[in-house]
Image 1: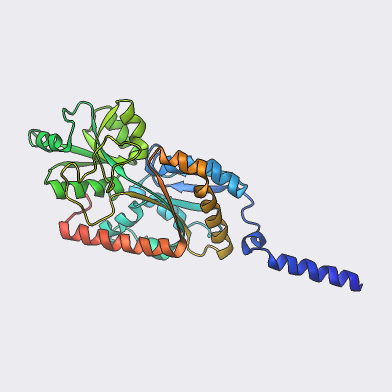
Image 2: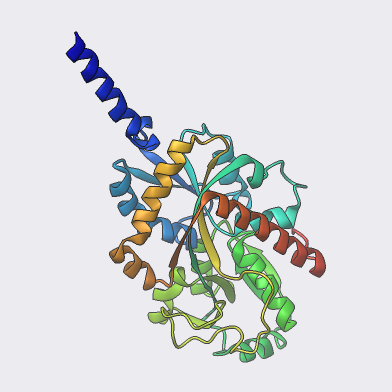
Length: 326
């Protein structure tokens, strides 16, 4: 009996010494990674670059689920109202902050600061200003001159009202004085597709989504939004090199993982460890570098503070420029 009690005590101590994430047994079924826009855009591209590695790190299937609509709110609300068990997660980008600044809760009760638990910040990537081959320009200066000759205002596409591409273009217009008509789509993939087809002249979208299209000659890239040239497209100048004044807001994409408010700490810890492992893998980093995605893993609390800052900075810009949702 004494031996049994001693063995039981040892087993209990061993169990207690295990990490909290191991005690939870999480995950034990597929995880759904929600993307707020259609396939082919920046966030979807990033998700598909890391999904297999994440599956290996977590030991369960990772299902990428695209839920486009309402400028991202369909997906954002879906995650916010899901069970906080770690099996429904949002792979988000700047749009979740920009939309809060643009709408100021007038169109929705959604609030990512109170309805989400930030799990981790993951990476950043610049955007590129691309134009259709049918547009007779090769530089930003030529584009601005060409826009003045168009009988009606020139169109520009985005991934949707309040998306990163939408507000990035608003910054571009503010800094250059270019007039234009916003044509919102349900995601970056659709916007890019119509630029390729020549249905809309231009858009600003992620480098990783258009790198191959630029290299194959399907579209032209005029500038990138990063402070320095993109290693993925070294021949393309920065906005500043192209004569566009610097902005006070973040013009790169950032990517982060959020879950419904109330995620258990062991689940958040397990996910944070898994994403850090994936993005610390040399092969993954080399793969992402080809698309100009730079891993930048930060903690959940740090990501929450970054989200607060993003909402504050974009609100200041949007209010100062009088930008309204269409």
